[in-house]
Length: 232
Image (cartoon, rainbow, N blue to C red):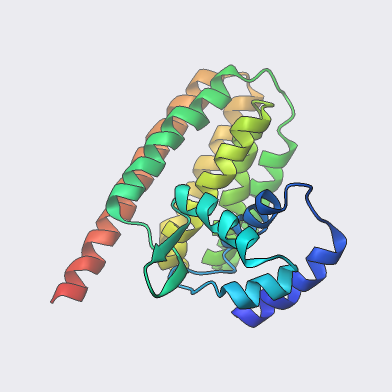
């Protein structure tokens, strides 16, 4: 999806809904687009184009950019503009530190027994795996982990997870054409659901903690390899 495609959709979206706190609304809209993989790392976010598409002032847009910059989702480069961020190795470590506190706790402490969202995400990921679609596996995986935190029933934790997943989309962008990276986690997600259905929440949390450690190590290794290639 090109920036022009995104702008066309944003023009339609602005007429359908507006938030009373416009800067918050704009930040949420852009975060959602980044989390969906529609705005890739390094993409320049034109104030003029986005302001026209969303029907907001530059001041409002800058307010939204400030919020997203604080979340490490966008980067401001002096005299050049605002760009969708490219996460560093330190960003990856921090993202996974947050996830290891947040997600296993949501599994262990939630009283919810409605795992519909998690099952649906696993089913979509399985279809994507069988089709060899890394992008669709990544999408389903995002939905699975959002669903894990939603089990806690907390709007604040859900918002934190949305911010984390927007950063995760940027991390995964370099892996989108690698089905081999995503495939093992499809079965891990299915195992987590089976453990939850059996009432084994602690075991599900332990599996997820190990899973997150493995994913972090793999991503850091990929980033190191890419850095070595660029330097050579």
